[in-house]
Image (cartoon, rainbow, N blue to C red):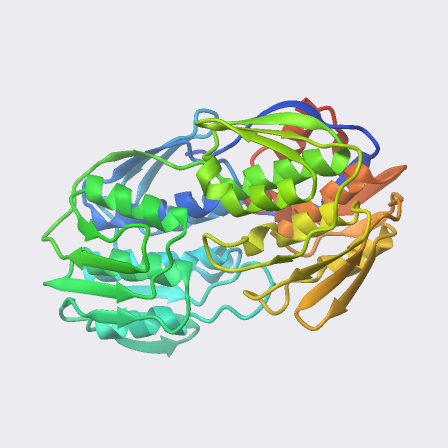
Length: 428
């Protein structure tokens, strides 16, 4: 892999709004599926081959961490093919400068503990959208037999032996479930995980691990059963489509009053967002791996409440709120996952939206035309919501600090331009 540049460039996006999006867009592989799969490669000395890996900064950051652990990384970014040679991986310390950029660094703990019986990982960074403690992860590791301590900022785990156990999560945690699965696949005996997350990204991880030789039952449910095995071997796996990227384009097309086709997507992963779009008066037609979206003149106000899969994703809350600014009436957007995920509200209001925070919900008074302005992105999904709003606004909108977008969207402005958007990236 070529040398990676981690300097944060102060790029911005300029958007001339008022253009209806039309055409087709190819959906990339899911960032939130690729990250645990990359970490899972540690579990096998033979490595792992992944396809449909998105070239986004979070992936690049985790690959840099993998290289620091001793992995040989061959990432062919244009094709999405990633070959990981993990024979010489060691449970070394990963510098804070790498892990501070992304929360997903915590996903290294489970596979390192599973294979080497120890892990040294800095407590994670990432978007400032609310408290996301790793206590559930640590409790799962301790149940499996690990000792835990914090030393000089590192979370240090050691276990003379990993033994199967019963793990009951107090709350649904996607990365906690993934970490527990990866730690348990090489444990002695059976591990049962209760109240497990059942997001498609968790299921994708399980399917890949089974290809590597793991024994896992209950995939896609809240009760996952793992029978430990002695070792895992090399496998080839294709990352599932990114349902959040797909949902973002669906809402962008609808907000612009356009029509478009999403290709290479799994509609079943977006059942609730699709229902909400239909409720808003948007025509949505699904195929085996396609979604067609056609907006009409009026967007109806629709209330949403975020919840774990299969509910409405918290990662689409900001984008749906931007869509609701175009609705003729009042809607309510309630956030139940993160307590600080309304940072985009103030920026949307700078564009002329009429939004008011009321506890853990936002009252959206739609129907007021938006006007272009200078706005600042605060996190990954908030960035996307500002772009959607800019697409509908009159005049020019400038979105600053778009390095957040680069963490999770592959060729975002390029794909929007292919749909007809007048959008340009500028390095300040």
